Image 1 (cartoon, one colour):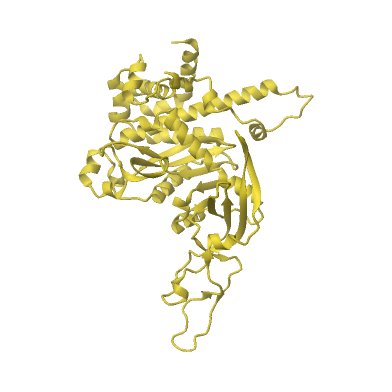
Image 2 (cartoon, rainbow, N blue to C red):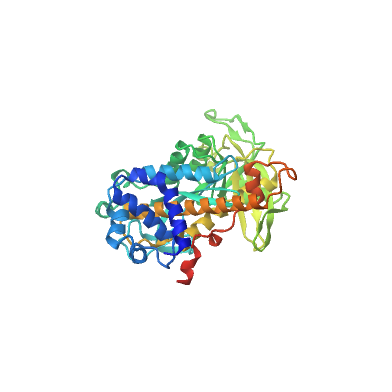
Length: 443
């Protein structure tokens, strides 16, 4: 083993120490670092067989038993991951991004595999879908939760669920939003710090999802379809007197709701640059207006076309017009006095989860697992997230060392707080780490 590789593997074992205690048995404590190192190290495939062939200290049976059949509880390691992620990137200026990456798969026996929409392919495909939560601050993401979504074709087949080892409490069908909220509650219970929850229209279009976030006193910004009905913020509920018949039991709005696209069309659209990308400033046209969403109690049939009353919460409706001609729409309960640039930058911060998912797949083999069981898939996903968190730890540590080396003497520059330093010089990308992440591309 080369000296550089030995150095980072020794460092990895030290960093993993809090994860190893809950594993109990010595064999499991030995296999965990080897599995994580296998995900990080060189090689095109990060499934058990190829990793075992590259790992002198472990054979296939040992690694396979650890991830697929070993009797150990993932929950303590998941809690430790949340703590490590919070220490790395948690804080009031962090965001928590909810998404659902797809893992294309052949066949039909791997748990959760079915024809469903695959975001990565932009079409229906045979795949597994994971609900993900990613914590990020200053464009540094750390995935902290990956939970498999089970389509109804699976939850309606008890024999199939049992064969795949799906835990009994999780065999009932749950929507992606329900899974996301359950994971969000786990994250909140662990004390993970963040300022805003972000999600795309697959989640944001659901009234129940938005209300669930508000009920948890969370700030959120979510995508919606352009057809989402909204009212102007000054809508008034009235009690018109009927000329005949029974008196009204509920008030009615004094105006009709309109689609989000229609509400924003006459607004002032401004060019907003929210950050610098590798090819220059990232900008688009944005417009925003305060509204009340038509997601309240529905009126009776025959009363104004059975429309929904205005919701209790006044929120931002935001529109984005990209240079490609594509238009996107969002809702957010960020405060009324916030600037358009801050609204846009917050909404666009969601891109970091896509970057994290790509790196999890391409560099850490998230989609390389070849087992079929529920526990095997989730343990492989957990090890991938732990490997990612370790690399971000190295990345931030290296960036901090670089800043200290470049920093002028104390007499020439006043001391600055850690958060401001963090923003002043973003860490290098994962592919530039001293750990041989990118070497597998040449293997």
